[in-house]
Amino acid sequence: MAASFPETAISTERLLLRPLAEDDAPGLATMMADDLVLAWTDLPHPFTEEYAAELARTLAPAHRAAGRGIVFAVTEHLTQRLVGLVELRNTDWRLRSTEISYVTAVWARGEGYAPEAVLGVAQWLFEDRGFLRLELRTAAGNTAAQQVAQKIGGISEGVLRSAWIVRGESGEVLQDSRSDLILWSLLPEDLESPELHREGWHGDHRYVLRD
Image 1 (cartoon, rainbow, N blue to C red):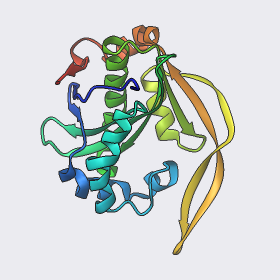
Image 2 (spheres, helix red, strand yellow; image 1 turned 45 degrees about the vertical axis):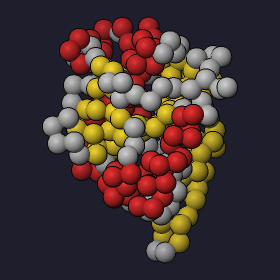
Image 3 (cartoon, rainbow, N blue to C red; image 1 turned 90 degrees about the horizontal axis):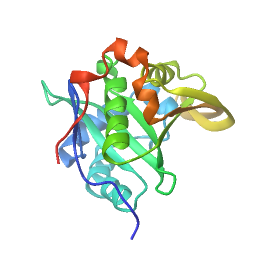
Image 4 (tube, helix red, strand yellow; image 1 turned 180 degrees about the vertical axis):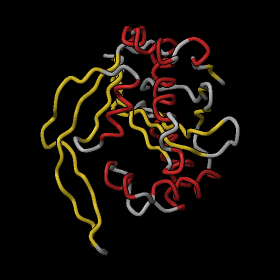
């Protein structure tokens, strides 16, 4: 039987990362309708409420059970409103390495939610699950995603040339173009950097498991 992540929730200072629920479908569909999400991710288009419900009900649990990764809904503690989605994918259990991707709702951008969520997952991976490497891949033109990688202390390891498809719409036609990817990594020792301490990511802001 393949190794897999446990079904769990992760609490940070402002956010709760938890398993997807079918009730998240309307919020997910609205979040994924944004042009930037369409451009920078490989999520289905259109991302319908029906697909969102299927993701919560079947696809995300199967992804976790097969050992490929895990999907978290990101919600605010204060309002319980859905502010984003975080996914671990391409997990290598022998290397104790996995890749993270993240989406933030358009109304929640600029609040620091993405770095907080990603750092919470990184701490959980390294401290609770014994992982030794977390990878991020950002499209060359996706400066917002690159800023998240930098804020959590990620190290740029180079460029994967022509390794991604960037999508855009021209009228009713969906157009694809190729893009480079920037490869970032985060190791357990990177979380001890002085920069992260100065930014306040440690101490009271550490994750709490909610099994």
